[in-house]
Image (tube, rainbow, N blue to C red; front, side, top):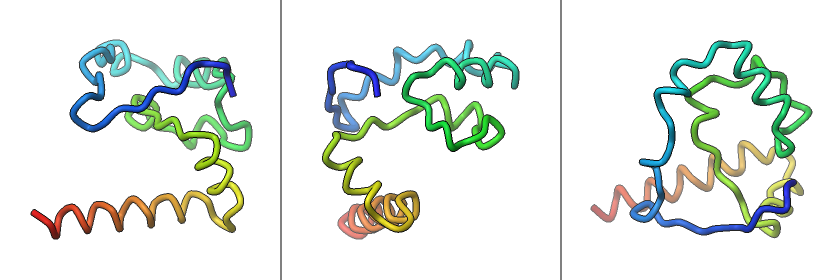
Length: 95
């Protein structure tokens, strides 16, 4: 992982307006593969065909302790999705 500073955002403070959506939408598959290959944080176990331009547009950076806990689970992706779905369900139920 890179040595970048960890920054926390809420949904309200997330700087989504700073994303160059036109550049992302214009990316070819080759551009995407080069971008992934050049990303020091990219998971080498995932092939470029596992990614879609829309999925690459928004990455979630996890704190190291959270990432370590997830990596210790049998299926980290399934666990993360289950946690997020439960949170969404609670938020929807509260509305």
